[in-house]
Length: 338
Image (cartoon, rainbow, N blue to C red; front, side, top):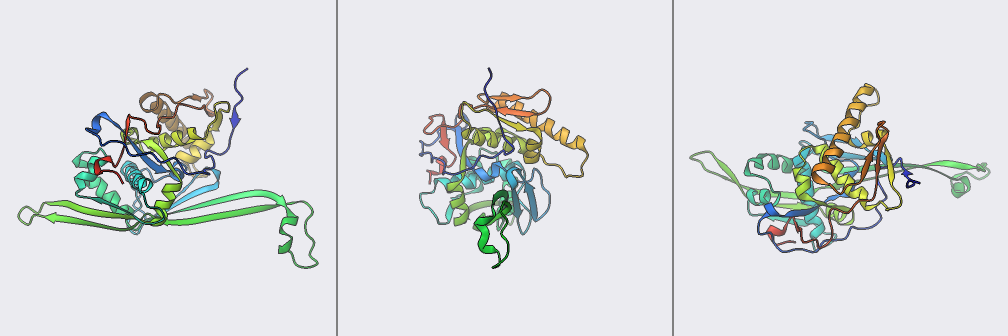
């Protein structure tokens, strides 16, 4: 008989423990021949940044399991593939910091140094500065709504004297919210040549907020940054990170079936009054991304795609990132580590 498949309506396993911190490896002789390790908050594998520039100061992404992400920025919310790479850099520096429950200071001698760390060419400097501006004074909020049935006598103190307490169960709705500031401050130098009007970015400092650093240190998932960077599609990055994170919670004897509607809801949601064809198109794009990830970036991935379009089944796969793996160097290794 085939393996018993555990069917879930939730895409996200409960994150109850801090991820293992990876010890610093030797500095890279050349980044081009190495895979580089970084981190992202596990929460952002559930709901992430907008795929493109929406030119808005607020963005709301409702994800599975009753969780919503709300991004706010006084200018424009971070977005796209470069916003995701910046988030990974921030998270990695926070996770690797030796100090806990305090702001984390990240310093660079130049924009070129940051671009080298991110494995990006100089031509992407403008894009990275744009995202840094979006993250400045930006916050993210999370909201989780849960509904469970409990016996009414557990809440008898809420009833007035003489008021009849129901004998059976009652519905209990719990809403949990929190707001975290990404950075406490950003400082940078602009060097302007009056004769040519050209300008360069010199030393700059990013102060990650204590709450954001603590959030990352407690809830971060390690990923292959080199792979994450090379995936050009923002939704592809989200799916890759989720597959790595989701694999951590799988057991070999319990494959998990993920329905198509949950995949669409998490990665490419559509409005309730939208044409049903849009959901079909979005599901097809998600499946195409999964196929490409398996072929090009995560060949060890064990996934079965239902031919009728019902969803996918995930099986426990070899972990793509291992502690002390000599193939990997930390993303901050060129800076001497933190």
